Image 1 (cartoon, rainbow, N blue to C red):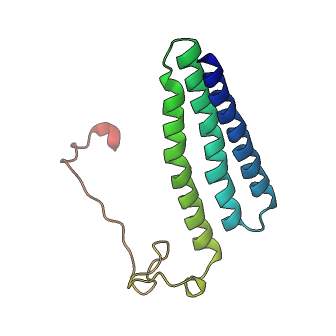
Image 2 (cartoon, rainbow, N blue to C red):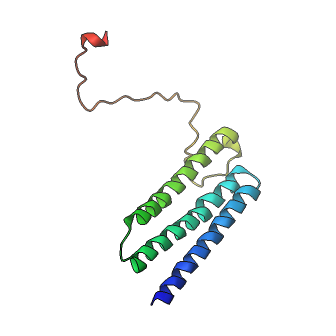
Image 3 (cartoon, one colour):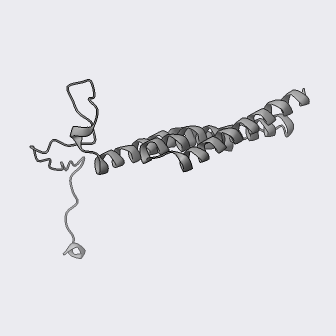
Length: 139
């Protein structure tokens, strides 16, 4: 049983190392920002996730303790990496691309990053409760 567990943990660590290496290599060698963005968000996330899952399995099988820290870190990583990549990609599109050069979305609406320049957008302020009365310190 221990040999099987050690083999699974070792395979997870080796696979995680390969994913981390490929993600780092892609970050360095890919030509532009949009293609470079793909490597660390996918491959490196799988690499770090593999190390964390291997650590969780080790402590569960050999130490008899179930460690929730690694599971929570993995969940946090898998939730935040795609969101961060999406925001970086939208910022890059907004800064370096013109809406005319972007590919068609296939729908009636355009890309969410770009605003319609013909209509002015005003912020909307909403209140959920009444504001407190001003005090002398506010003046």
